[in-house]
Every structure is written in structure tokens, then in C-alpha cells.
Length: 344
Image (cartoon, rainbow, N blue to C red; front, side, top):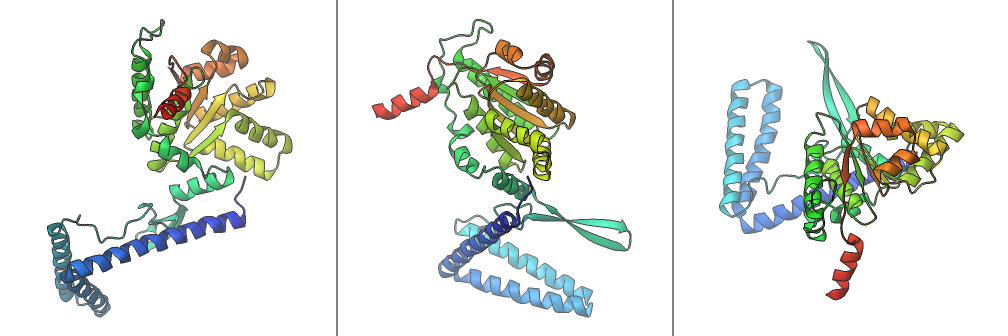
């Protein structure tokens, strides 16, 4: 669905707030440093004064003087870095930091286009962070960042998985299986830009499928990729509106689902399974394979149940193109967490 004007303006206001906040933080740092290290203020004043002189010399075309001034400014900047480090601060401590360094918190990236040797055109394109902001707004996923602050690799716990309980098919323990699953996730992330891959997590409720999916999603979001997260029920509800309403909003929704860098379908099998959902799952899986876009599916269904519940061609596509990861534990991890909290 397209972004409404009010939604678009709200996103721009968020970028304005982000810029103001980062400038405020820098000003507070500068004030504190000028009090603690007075020589810093003198260096900054001299650098600012030289910047004004540089503009004047550029207009006058005095290249020799301009080069000497640039060298002086470079020396002043190096002295500033050395002074900060001498007092225990990183050399870029008084540099403006951006939430998104790629677009410098503007939401847009400006590229230079040279149609010929004598002309230059500027092309503005939405930054990856702006595209994700649109996704979060349109699909009400603004809370995903809050979830990912908790559900990420830093907080993944192996001690919920047994070293004794073994999978008779693989001979691996629950603990070893979890280790292998995490390795597969890192391969998926490391190769994401070079070779599109797909993952299917399966296992009983509470074995860590959604948690591990969110770990992957966070890493990719942090690297600037666009991620759309749906439960199976949400996905098929949106797709059904697209099929039966056939309006411009539905068409735009389909494009986002097919084109985002990573699509997450959580809890496949909890929706009402019928010929429509089966055909739409095939459409979604197949279209993203054609476009070379990655997908992660998690499900409580066994491999046999997936094959029985969806069409043969859908299962065939998934079997050929997805890495299957089976997680299992002796006890539901959510129950284990609740028990540990109560026992404290």
C-alpha cells in the first residue's frame, strides 16, 4: 500500500528530530570539552577562520595560497585529534555522528551522474533507512526494533538446549543442533549480499525458531537491508485483499512483499490452510526466488505436514531452495524462562 502524505511527512519529521538531537549531543560535548581543554576552542576557532579564508581564496583563484591554507587546516585538525587522544578521548569525539552515516540522516542519498564529460547531474534516491521507515509505517512494524533489542545474537542462550537429548535422525544433541543453527544463520548473513539464500526453521512451539529469525533480521536491518516481518495469518490476509480488491494499494503491497531484501513469514501453518493460501504461498515463494530475494519461514509443522498441507509444487520449491533447520528442546524455552524468573 502506498504511503499517505501524512505518513510521509511524519517520517520526514522523525529525520528532522534525529538531526536536531545529534547536533544537540555534539554541542553538549563541545561545551564540556571547551571547559576541560580550553586549547580545543582555540583550534576550532582557527579552523573556522581558515574555512572563511578558503572560500575567499577560491573566489580569487589564488591556488598557491589556497593550497597552503588547506595544509595549515589539515595540521590544525591533526593537532585537535592528538589533543583529544592525549586526554583519553577518541580522535573523532567532536565529530558529528549520524544515526545513518550513508544518508547523514537526511533520508536520501545523492549520486553524481555524468551524462557527458562537461556536465554533471545530481540524482536523489531514498536511503535504505528511509525505505525501512516506510515499511515500518505502512505495515505497522515500528515495534520491531524494540523486539530486536532483546531478541538478537547477543542474548541467544545455548543453556536452554540439552547436551543429552539427541535427535535420532542426525545423532546431534539439542545443544549441538542449536550451535549448527546459529552457524547457518551467520553463513546466511555473511553471504546475503552475494548469494540469495532462504531458511526454514521448523520444530515444536517454544524451541527458539522466532528468536533465531529475529536475530538474523536484526543483523540485516543493522546492515541497511529492508526487512518485512509477517505472521502467516497477516501475510495471507494482505494477499487475499490484493486478490479480491485488486486496487492500487493492493498492487503496491504485493510489490513490497516481492521486492524487500528479506521477507520473514512466521508461524506458517497457523493460518487457515486451504487452496487459496496454498496457491498464494507458492506465488510468494516462487516470485521471490525469481527475483533472487531471500525469505525466512518458521513453522511448527513437521516436514511431512508441510508437504501434506501445501501443494506438491510449493513443497518442491521450498525443498530445493531452502536450508531446513530443525530446532528441538526437552522443554518449551518460554516456560524455562518463566521458571527461572519465578525462582529468582
